[in-house]
Image (cartoon, rainbow, N blue to C red):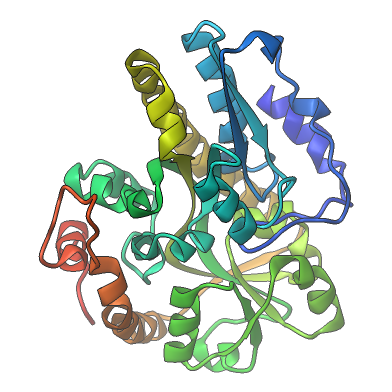
Length: 361
């Protein structure tokens, strides 16, 4: 099913793709390719779940995978009605709907998640959880990951698990093989506090821009580079204009699967258990698929002529050193505690840094 969907979606060139920074509204998308193989009308409980992006990405497809597995495990008692493509609006708008209970769930991007849960910004801090292996380690950390996922509890929203879309770097319209070249590029960055702090600290020319504006801006030369992942840049056709990619791997892009706490608590205890176990199992599987997808997309891009580079060691060391200041500047938001936090560390960021082996430059 996933492979068939990928083939179908590769041909749909007119659909705008959004990955955590705003709505994709190029056309009204169809969900025909992902219709459930069952009749959901008899479900006792319904859960409407939103996502801004396109399910060709494994991290987004998780919504449909959770739907199908949940239906099977609950014997048709819970129907998760997944709405990708920004069908319910942009992320900030949908977060408000979720908080009010108008919808029940969301696969929110790590970028937008800080609007209601600043602690979620931890994942965007540079060179902290910046590889698939480190992400696996963080997910397996027990109390640290649980505390991270509790970031929106004070807002009446529970976090269950995460999927992703790869490692961040630079897609550019001309080669960027060193920092000297990077300083001549006008980069588009996401509408996110941590990202803006980082590019300010790096001293690079960054333009904060909603994702739907990127295609035209890139083609017209308003921007010359993107801060994003290889999978996103290839799947969304950004490599058609930005034909060079520089590996940085400074952060992982995530979708965080969050749900309205009141709705979740309205489920019988046995269904609550099945619900959380299903989300955990599907997300774990999808994270493995995401690793493969990134490797495949890089291979495809290379074969189509995209050139990939790595910065010199001294340049990477400088970027990491400058990134230390971002950790310090955003530390208070990461460490803030709320009434619903059962784990109450004196310095959560320091605990995560130590656990992940983060070393200041």
